[in-house]
Amino acid sequence: MPDLRIDPFPSSAELTTLWSAAWNTATAPDFSRILPRSLAHIGAYHDNRLVGFVNIAWDGGIHAFLLDTCVHPDMRRQGIATQLVREATRIARERGAEWLHVDFEPHLTSFYRACGFRPTGAGLIKLT
Image (cartoon, rainbow, N blue to C red; front, side, top):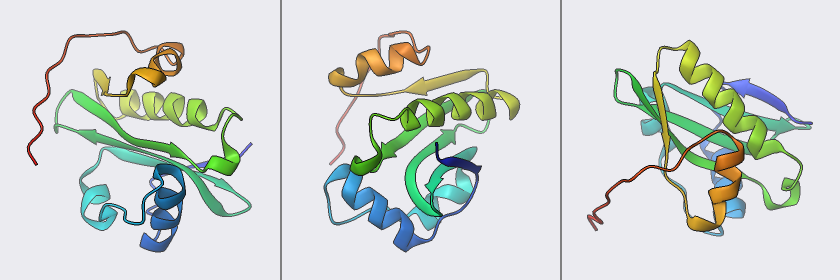
């Protein structure tokens, strides 16, 4: 199993490599602006290579939000995402969050249910 690291602040190159493989896109967000504002982030490392990631954003109070959960395609189906989400849940609780939110596509419903999330009603507006 990969080594989970709390707040590792991976390099832009590491994140772009993982992001490109996991999300099948050439560009990644500018995490150098995002991660310093996060409650925490967790990297999964295998042979010192970033193979999984989750960001825990927050409102500065009691609400935290899982974002950007991903695992490199070569490392999927090994429980890494489950480890990341469980560790994120633990860290968010430890750092004072009372609620942990996540948005996801329908095909991930069973995964997030297995991680302990319950369905809720929500709203969404596309801004761009």
